[in-house]
Length: 295
Ligand SMILES: [Zn+2]
Image (cartoon, rainbow, N blue to C red):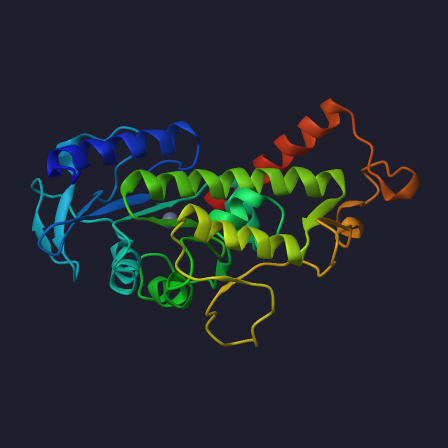
């Protein structure tokens, strides 16, 4: 059932409230848009907290970003160019959500893509979450940076900036944003604990088949080869070691990075933390990431 414009305005208010409540945005960060019939876009305006919006605040533009209607003085979000490039390349996409969730933005600041085959759910739905190169926010640099990835991914990190999620409707895009941040949280905890068992290449192949079985729409297939540098990815590159006959493959290649002497390392390279130490580490990491991304 197609949702009315009035309902979509209420949906944007609700999604904005959830982004703010979950700490995915601070101050006036983030922006949300939805396709309207007649080649138009309904979008959040500039300079408002996403936690405290009302339906009449939204603006309507054409698909070139020209303002068609809105309250006096309201302008479309400064990131409208990034939204427009997504709609231009993806006719299947009807909503775009951009936010600065602290953990996924932390990975984007660290330059670490969320592309390891770790969670079956994420491999099946999103494939991988690559990092688009840095572009100055609100300039044409940002759409140019996301363009190569947007054709093949529904979820992206934006280097030193935040995250972007695309969906067939608004709540689908919002839930993808939740999945990005949840995956970043789990990945951070696994890395703090000092080991990450990856799904084997063969298991990832089985998960890819599930997409067909369950009719999961993905813009591109998963591939497990590194594409040549500088070439647009044509698939969702997932890091998964080949291990015929094994479903899970231990990977502790990042252990040296986290074992910096602060963390007690036991026999066999296992990092031993109390629950309190782990909580403090996570809170510390989040504080650092938040400070860096809002500075
Ligand atoms: Zn932003």
